[in-house]
Length: 144
Length: 144
DNA sequence: CCATTTTCCTACTTTGTCAATAGGAATTTA
DNA sequence: TAAATTCCTATTGACAAAGTAGGAAAATGG
Image 1 (cartoon, each protein chain N blue to C red):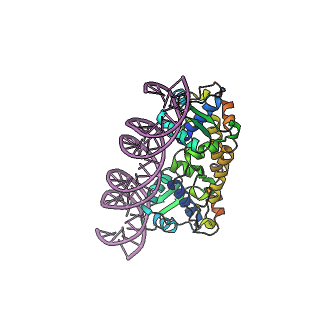
Image 2 (image 1 turned 30 degrees about the vertical axis):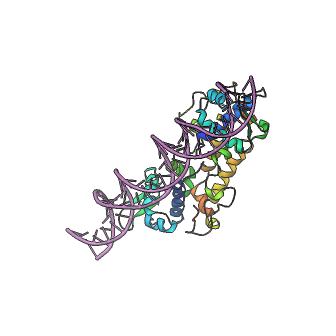
Image 3 (image 1 turned 120 degrees about the horizontal axis):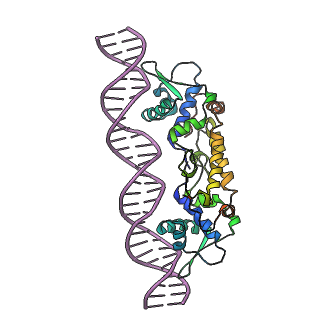
């Protein structure tokens, strides 16, 4: 029941980009330095966010990344699902049909469904903008 | 963000024991057969529940395991924490002081706290008795 | 055109955990 | 004393997590 570094880094990444007020692209190097994360690892993570449509990239000098939508429209769920995969606590309640043929006789399915809903309710309603509002000092969100 | 087989098996184990109405001890072999789980693996899992005070064991022929408390007093949280360890989504919000020195500047700590609370609220209020009530047919709760 | 800066792409490595499997010791009962 | 049980520890194979590494492709500024 853990969110891995990949997902946590992705969130910090998005918060970092969202916090820049000038419209200039932010480079991996910049973010990696500010967040104290391996830039090569960040590269792989942001590639997921890029192909997932949450950021867009600009190559070459002065290049970098920009959010593809306003932070109010990017939820924590979007970021975490791209990086972590599904966040459901067990396979049986995953989005599509990974479902268990004995579901009708299962004593725990309701528990998993309730857990799944509680988690989704939070991550699908919290946006990057919400997280930025929590950040006390710009450029200083270092939590693991 | 997954509950491993260990935790899921532990829950099925407890439900299985709780479902027996005669006061006789239930052997590993019995449960493993009924639940279609490796008995050697179950052994290791029930050892955690035993040393954690949720079941008690009786050796020798006709031996086995019994719940140490009524199912109404055993929560899902007790079972999962013994088998899975902490269920908090990130180290920073774990029960004791694994805490992050930059917490004051962290944009995501509130998110993790809310997730943690949502999960705890469910698993600490749902009991084994509640799960047994969900079970449609005795001896037939096979979900992974 | 060219050097530099950036993203892009793929492969590799290391470490640890999950999910068992295995074998036998200790205890209790009949 | 044989059988049934729990108890204890070690080992294994597969997989994922968390990076590390090296270079190709694209854009810019001079």
